[in-house]
Length: 124
Image 1 (spheres, one colour):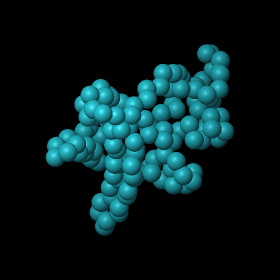
Image 2 (cartoon, rainbow, N blue to C red):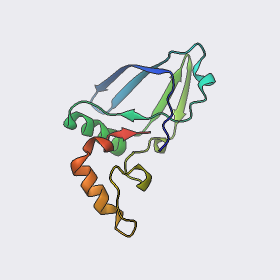
Image 3 (cartoon, rainbow, N blue to C red):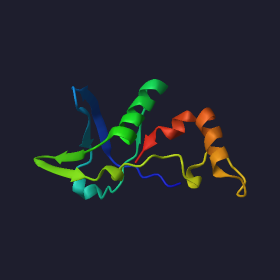
């Protein structure tokens, strides 16, 4: 699996919960000389770190309750489709352990979930 590395620094992640809304804010900074447009970055991967409980809680929020995604660059605000965020670790090319081609892929997923839980806390 190819890995793309960009000169982007994750400055902070904040979350806030109100009565009817919750938001998560990622503050990113381009640490190269150019601007974000010059990076030609069409995909970012994030790892939900911390305790298993915290990482899986954020995972649940993102993949079960997310209703809107906004990207703010300077004064510009862009709305993205909710399905632009995808989980990682489920496809066969992201497998951590070799598995026979004639075996049901679900067995591999169950094994990897219990032995390599952190593999499932990545998102694109």
